Image (cartoon, rainbow, N blue to C red; front, side, top):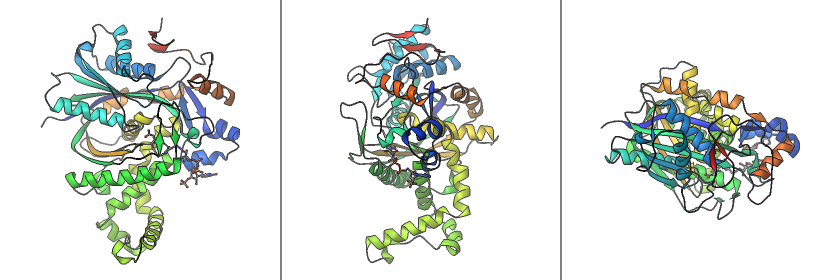
Length: 440
Ligand code: HMG
């Protein structure tokens, strides 16, 4: 079977940066360590007043096509995944395609365009759609572009405000990809949940604490479902495990639970038995409460073991490095985590070709999806071409007052006319509804 997967990735961050410990924490009267140590975040990215989901997505896709030497004729499909859409009829991909047609010769008249929605898991679903389209033999040898783009803003003073972010990830899905091959095996954990909703409203109504429990429950189910088709997972099987990252502190919890699950009935559990005992088994307890208490104690002890800490530092921690600096990008978050992992291997000069990653996507509402990816021969040159560090470094750092103004500027309910804080440096800017323009 020919490999199908991600050939290339481009990341586009919002041009503004809010320093969480330095600027946000003092204004909120909070301890800076709540953000850096608790949530695991240093900063959030925000869009300048001339940026939105279309411009960020189009700028990412533009760089992707230009770098890969593609014309519109080479692209048979453009899907945008977002939970920040402004149009309930016309998909964001048509706006993006309109932008790209201004700068490339040719058009996308024969490309299938769509918009995927299932909270943050939607971009993984769009990658799936592209994978299936290629596998089904319907692609006519063309590539698919999948764009994850969001302005993940919360209402002011909502606890989620600390986890905001904005940016886009554009991915090229092809046969014989340079970056990663995607496994045919997948696992799902899916249930009707109401922890995070945006019914005809811009900012989410979110029960933050519950949303974390739902994330962990659905992720566990997805891993179990994945194992039912791909066989048991083991911590040594994966070079990296990129998870959906609403904030790194969430992934700290997911990583620990994932590890506990993976070591069950393995030699790792045997090795740790003298130090912390074996995992409690339900049949040894009279009631759920006592069992759950025993599990909590076991997990706390597991978190302290050198074995776990070394595994986490090598396999999960490196996936969080970009996220720490940009916050939650909703649909883009898990794809940033993958990019962060690959960048880590590149910087450490690891020979990653042929190694596997286990990718855990999640969207509120709620659904988790787990699949494996095998790193391909061309991964190094693809990672080298990403300019994410350069983009992060050149963000404009907001004062708290500027942050308030820019939040208002992106709040549909508030009239705002803020000046641009940065000079546009790329092709597409937002200059009014229906005028998504190429910069003159
Ligand atoms: P909060 O209530 O303000 O924060 O909101 P907290 O008091 O729970 O503190 C957060 C952590 O910091 C805790 O760590 C504290 O102990 C620690 P934990 O106990 O959980 O390990 N902390 C400190 N650490 C060191 N020094 C200190 C200090 N103070 C506190 N001084 C909450 C947190 C996540 C609830 C909030 O940010 C929120 O509502 N966020 C939005 C919802 C969210 O991100 N949920 C995640 C799971 S759902 C998901 O991922 C889907 C999503 O991406 C949407 C989609 O799919 O579309 C959100």
